[in-house]
Image 1 (tube, rainbow, N blue to C red):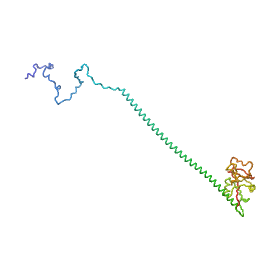
Image 2 (image 1 turned 120 degrees about the vertical axis):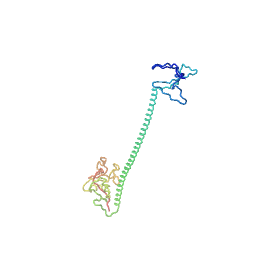
Image 3 (image 1 turned 45 degrees about the vertical axis):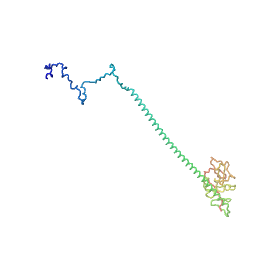
Image 4 (image 1 turned 45 degrees about the horizontal axis):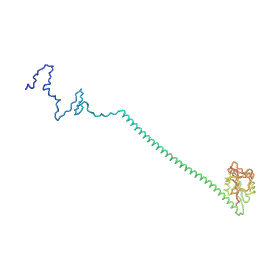
Length: 310
């Protein structure tokens, strides 16, 4: 039995000598452990390749019936790789379009805001103008009412003065019609033909003199005849210029007495009345007894006339 497991030609070789080829030996026919198939139910992970070795897997093609082994098997088409500069170009165009749309949108928004702002400002200005026009209208109406009221008051004042003068004149005439046993004049008045005359010692304007006579139940002297003219011209010791109850205020050149009667007998000085400076509307008696037209605002003496009292 020992002979079966021993090599007949085995012998001790010196150290360092190479052993003969033992490929045909039994021991060498046994596969190594690493080449043995794995045990059933157990699979060890594949061992990594040794360091320093670049082992690439080898794919073996199984020949098919009718296959031409001289040509390689058809491979699936490779995916087309996009060209980088084309993709960048289209991406840039898209970004430019987006920017343009954003700019247009902003421009529209700004335009709308500016339009709304302008409309609001216009409405505000319109309201201010309307309010100003309303205020001006109210002021104009108030001014007209004020002017109308003042004119009305002035006219009313003139009416009152005229009524007062007419009343005084009526009283004088009524007293003159009374049958009196004794005719007398107030102190300081001169009688003549049933009338009394007052020669003022001071000067006043025509309107002020007229008012004084009215307050004393008389009126500025009215010359009715030549006798009265002579009396008035010579009655006072010292000659003076006196106001007469004669004017042409209503119509230029139409001279009328205070009782409204026209002039039928006149004693105008030559070249009179001349309405000098277009401002002479009241009549006066000169020192010699002739008449002259003067400005009603000028101050001079005056003569009041009234009926004698009983």
